[in-house]
Image 1 (tube, helix red, strand yellow):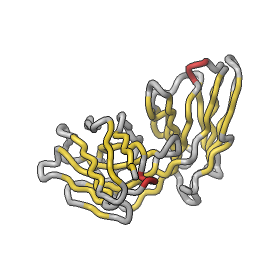
Image 2 (spheres, each protein chain N blue to C red):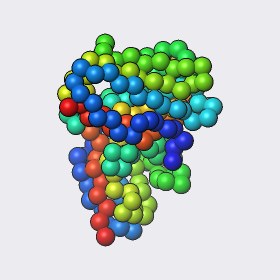
Image 3 (spheres, chains in turn purple, green):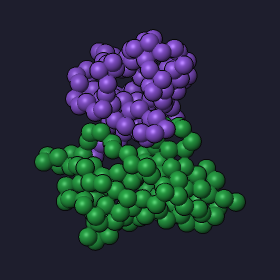
Length: 114
Length: 115
């Protein structure tokens, strides 16, 4: 158990809909990263938040958005869903130990768009 | 970040050492080598990291060649629960010496440990 929690574990929805994925980082971790894992693209970085501020963006679609709240939990919002958005979505929180950062991943949310 | 090359799959007998190679011939002096693994659609799990010296922790050992162009992750006594996809990742170290930011995952090596 990494200490990172994600809800829901599974989500089934229809094309065109909007969903929100939630991530609670490990206690004390200020950074939250979101990754998408699909069969054809592998694990891909989406976005990084640090203490409520966006730090970096990866290949995140304009239909997707995220935020990190004052209590440090984060939400990933996916809208106008398409079949190709079906994937595993992971969040990771991180701790900086000296000069090295280690990311701890949650169990993921499996999204199926029908 | 430097590109890594790993064999797509490897087998190992239970109880034997599993040696997983990684080529990172374009690595630069300010990049760390990290290893993560992913067990059947679970979240990736951190294993170990290193810069230029060999490293060991409770999970594995990391051997980095002197020229830093390749490394080997060693699981000394593989068990069935070590069956997973193993990812070798290089990460930039900032001017301040810190290493942080996104992880860039390749295809990894599927390690199958058999009885």
